[in-house]
Length: 307
Image 1 (cartoon, rainbow, N blue to C red):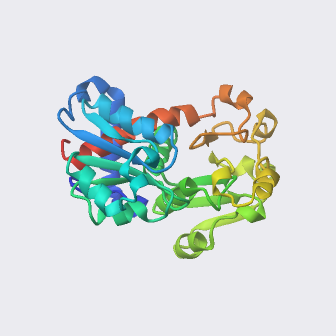
Image 2 (image 1 turned 135 degrees about the vertical axis):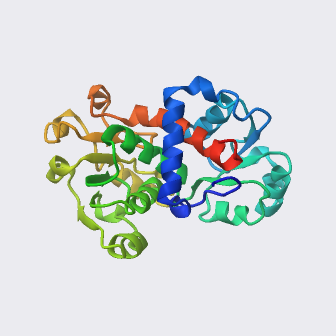
């Protein structure tokens, strides 16, 4: 069903296809050893044109745990990009050697552009401030594991909602489910982009509210999705310094929250979640990391047609 497909946008797959991915990921979680040799003889290329730790390592770990191999680069300075090679030529070249490509690029739309020239499936591992669909799959699997379903949830998104591609992707994905409400918590300068509101929230008549103070709404949330203020997206360092400490989740604020609140974060964090929160049973962000590897194992398997 998914063999040979690209994943560029969270909405590239139907809800039924997503359910099949989550079911496979759940099977891997329960009995990882049964999937150890699934991708024997297969090669994943990781083409990362900007820095990454969690996303790149989780892709590589996923392929290695499936019995496959990995090649690629972690920054363009170690590739022919430095010689002026174009994306189409890089993709055609790498696609001649491997079976599947995970690509991260600072320019919005670059993975989609690459998919027009690729002889193998392309997975968008993040394109600028636009989309991050495998993080969205990670977030969805985490929500499924901790809440049991995707409907009837109030989701707070806190921090950098302007540049946070994980936030944009999650809104797109969760807007497909029933009775979802979003609470958008950010300073005025980092509010959600207008196109997200126009095309998705207003366009689909999704219930949402925009607020500036986390304390005012934390008691209403089923899920709190924290994000860091991203220094690399700012042109003006003074603006970054002024806004970077806008929201810090600590034990005191959590006293106001529901007992079954689930706290997610795509990581890395800077200081937006206090380390004291790590010991709270509502903190799910380190479990979220592991779910990211499992959903990428399922995704690779499906796109390669080995499952």
